[in-house]
Image 1 (cartoon, rainbow, N blue to C red):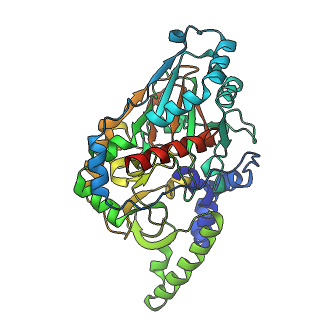
Image 2 (cartoon, one colour):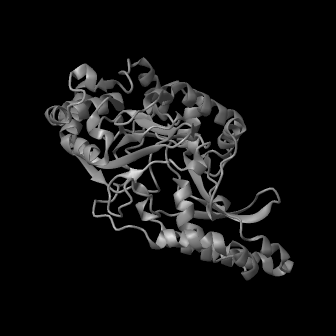
Image 3 (cartoon, rainbow, N blue to C red):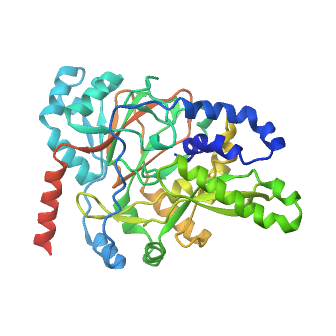
Length: 425
């Protein structure tokens, strides 16, 4: 997510460097500028706005109640072989049409469903037939407002996007996260395997309800009370300010911060705050962009269940560095590496301690399920209940994803959930 945002904003960032610095980075900036210029026009609706839900009045009580529940199996599998329809695409399509509501209810109850052995989804046309058959409502990639994720078939109006398959990122462990960018988050997603990596490359899923249940109560209380916010990028282009006379450094910093903030906020559909800091091995003066504060736990849009909705596992700079000691540093091919540095803080900009980060990492890792997908396998997931990620890999990997703003029958499911809540109350 942040990498594509970085690519989109890189040309803007470069404008704030003096001529000497800008010339050194021109070759890197040009490729990113072309990417922004070629953003496709997609006819599908935009990703819906994130539903943060109402404030949870007592987060400790909510967690205690979650711990008392017997949560349903997470990510049950449905096999074409077990259904007796392996190799029969017509029968598989008929199965999806006839069982559409049941499958969507299963996704809602269990957080995700894993479909195995369905020949129908081995190619993109069949994959689209699958999600149309169960009446999922397609939407744009949530990144669309700030960047352009490549499509699986290379067509600019395609509703199926390429997952993170690049060879340059094969040794980068993609941490667990819910898909959202600023103010937008799809309700659900379907991840498909068109070609499995020769080694590794497993698709990773984790149940947000179980993570919320297992976290330390004091930590949950503090996270919810103080909220969280992300650093989405760093602009290391301002070392030249240190060479200015001391009396004018302050005014220049104030002016540059205002200009950069206005330029970046004009490019994205969510507000970011710019904070001065130092970064890199040489402590170069830089501007860091931070998103607005948000809750780490939200009520599910349909069922009302509290669920972990926090991307610390993928966004924390420390946790990424810890993983680099295992898998090696990420290899970049363009100038986005200079600003593609995310991190997470408390909502009041306070530092989250290493001990707190370790606790969140341990609980997340405990709940990760590694799903080794083969050609035609699909994981249909609820984006609010189910986090996702990707393991490192060797070879060639071709996975793709379709995002959904919702599905047919969702409102009816919401009414049922509301009725059940009223009865239990």
